[in-house]
Image (cartoon, rainbow, N blue to C red):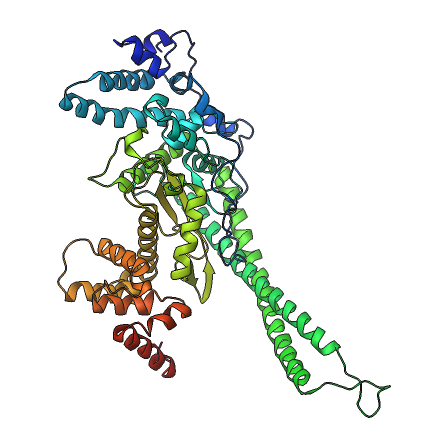
Length: 549
């Protein structure tokens, strides 16, 4: 292990040294192990399922009351910020420091470009090392660098540093939107399952992998049934509230006109209410029977799940997250960032003043994402809804906020493999996008496509949204990636067609009108905005009359 005298070594003049805040006197310690961070308090297999459950009672977003923190982050005033981020990270920090020195000192544009490319890999290697510290108590400069991509203070303008310091650090858990360090902490603690990858598991662990797959599937089934019961209870409580309101109406009696000392019975409107109460009571009885059956089934499923947990423990199958899983997760986040930036985008991973917009309202912060998600849902009410076995749930995906100059948001997976009913999808949103609204709409278009495709499975080219769009795509002999074409059309659907500006081809508009419908107020408005929309609206009415919709 090199000491810090070597860590910050290299040919560099005093001005550059001051810019980087280099202090060679700091001592270096070894990097802690993932296991020490996440397993120190409990070496046993976790007995709990991931606890980030979906709240099915929520029907809309609660918009944030503020988008800036009242208390600026003090890390942006720390003159030794750079030194503190690189300290105790070994050779990876030494290599990054050397490359940054060469990059800043380079005069030839070709040399600048060469060092710039090498910095990308070196930076992510450093962040992988820093990720080993993303456990309880992780804070300070390393957290700020990991979360925001902020490393060299003096290549950011004072105004930009001031704005960056106002990003709200606290997470009130209102929505499942996480910065990278928060996400890794959730994966590391077992609260969230690791992201799916295409890697093949080692054959030596075939038996253990089989048990783990059975356990994951049982957990998914358990969560599905718990979600169903939770929905049924929500419906039952809604019926109960309606009955209570109607009983208040029935409780009121007028004085008899001929015998004022006596009260009348029910009048005609009250008799109608009485009939409605009777219907509600029958519905409540049916729901209660469903809940009773549901609990009996849940007990059976839970018994099987607990049995598999015990079997897994006896076989030594680790259900807690280990170092390899977290390393895979940070690699997934890096891949997400690459996809978000795109082939022709800016992959430089460190914040520089000329690369990002100075206005916090244009950044992909948690608060701004909430506002933009709500805006899209107002136009596409079904974007977060998923139907499984006739049960429709509103499920907000996990959002991982990536510290990159992204061109677009990306959906990594629409839902977890063994829980199609209630698990959240996973979306990556760039923190410093070229256009935040566009990045978010494209991410949700990606989610829309993948959910519909997975729902149709082998028949995705024949059924539903993907089937109809596939027909349009092939009939017009279009080239390129069909999903990319859909995402681009989804963007136009949300931003242009919703306002009556015709940008889509006729066939594509018909597909979106049917399978990605606007809410009634927008549809009512559009039917008067031209012949095209009027005809689509009439087709809706005809389908509704023939029960074919």
